[in-house]
Amino acid sequence: NAGVTQTPKFRILKIGQSMTLQCTQDMNHNYMYWYRQDPGMGLKLIYYSVGAGITDKGEVPNGYNVSRSTTEDFPLRLELAAPSQTSVYFCASKGTGELFFGEGSRLTVL
Amino acid sequence: GEDVEQSLFLSVREGDSSVINCTYTDSSSTYLYWYKQEPGAGLQLLTYIFSNMDMKQDQRLTVLLNKKDKHLSLRIADTQTGDSAIYFCAERKDTGFQKLVFGTGTRLLVSP
Image 1 (spheres, chains in turn brown, red):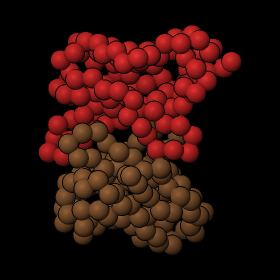
Image 2 (cartoon, each protein chain N blue to C red; image 1 turned 120 degrees about the vertical axis):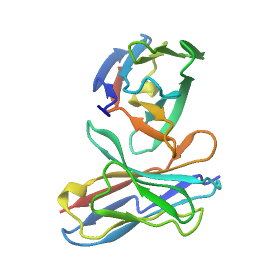
Image 3 (cartoon, rainbow over the protein chains, first blue to last red; image 1 turned 90 degrees about the vertical axis):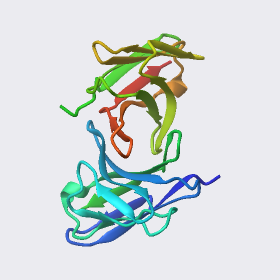
Image 4 (cartoon, rainbow over the protein chains, first blue to last red; image 1 turned 180 degrees about the horizontal axis):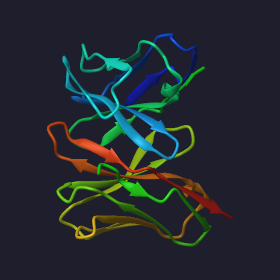
């Protein structure tokens, strides 16, 4: 089973560039989440979705956008990259049980 | 506030017990979790405890819950070098979308 797959694993962006972090899950989970992880700060929720066509803001949504056109995919878009968005990004999905995480995408904005 | 708090670092010798502590925020949280993150990887669920329990044991892992003090701990018996990782506690807030709030993470270093 693939579980939760994130791409790319690593990316370096220049300030002002845009990009999309891809996330897909093959477990038919309704709930999907994007977190960012900064050293000593734990995980902060950026956006979440409770099903296809439904998304909502988490704790730190500024500078990001998401869409959920299918159950499987939950891409995270950065429109104008800023150094403050340098972080490790984790996508997660949940059915009725535990939360499953992807392996993370390390983004550096220079 | 919203913060789930953990100490940042713990160092133990192989074979000793490790105890990782966590203070959470919401006395109505229904589930409390422990996740493990190895270098370069995502988080994996280690164990969880339902809020009406005081203790849960799972092989080398023992979870203790003190609801009155909102304190959660994870004890790892006979700690091995392979246990070196970052450990996150998380509380589940049963808002409409089952939000998990994570602690800051405790980096466990096990030396031979």
